[in-house]
Length: 364
Ligand code: UDP
Image (cartoon, rainbow, N blue to C red):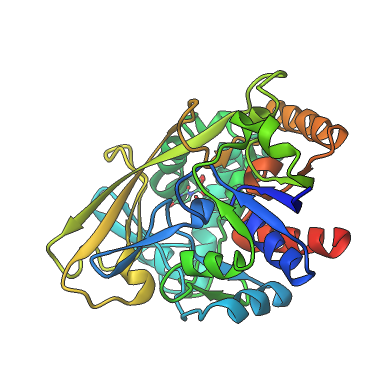
């Protein structure tokens, strides 16, 4: 066999594993069906601005090993994610914090904000939340739920909030300080110049083949390596024999505008049904850009159909059970699965890297 590893998918998981393998003297063939490396962290330059082609990727972690790893490959800037939510012409800071509460109710102290939230939570009368709506009402009360959560979430997931699992909303922190930093992790930033060059570094020493679809060329590809690491969709790997996993996909409308500053922030969420998109990313602000023009991307979520890019797993019971079945099949057939897509999990980037490092530690 020509290679020790055939790595299907040149995204974060595959690239990190490949990097570790090459360091151990292994020969790796990395293939991707897209015409570029990086998976969904892929960035490209437009008008001198780094554009996140598949949506905002803000790196954050509390895992020292992961942080040391990525910063050894690329320089990270000090970008802190502080999104703004626009509802009916008003702008609110996220995550929900004293700036948000002050704008919403005219309060100034944590005690005043708490009193209002406690009252609204009590009025909601939810004791054990069974769905996302109940979870939100029992955490933040009706005002915040209606202005900042309900319609955004329905646009994002294409489902009524009462039909969505509660855990999705646990990603939204609530705090009683004037702190707009969305994440609570110890380390945060964006690789200067984008993610693509970081992935290029990871793939040094590997053979990379783009526009190469494993599922369509299994017979020719499989014999080339003694072990296959597969990071694509597991249902597709097996021709959907047990049925299809559901995903949410995103469509981006990207525009170059002749202004130096369109919205004053990298991420602005539109939390009302009045706009069909969920957010607008103004890419230059990720790197504090001073270019004369700007590039914005409006983000439209929709249900995944064959041929579109899967972005978010829909982790309800039915899909999770099906994903577990496919994972068992993969093990039986000798594949190693990894990454957000193959694992069918709503991972952040640092988790994907940690998992790839752990796999490398285990098998190399
Ligand atoms: N969310 C919300 N209002 C917002 C932003 C997020 O209700 O302004 C909810 C929504 O349900 C979303 C979840 O929080 O699916 C997680 O959002 P986040 O932006 O953290 O996730 P990402 O899409 O960046 O992975």
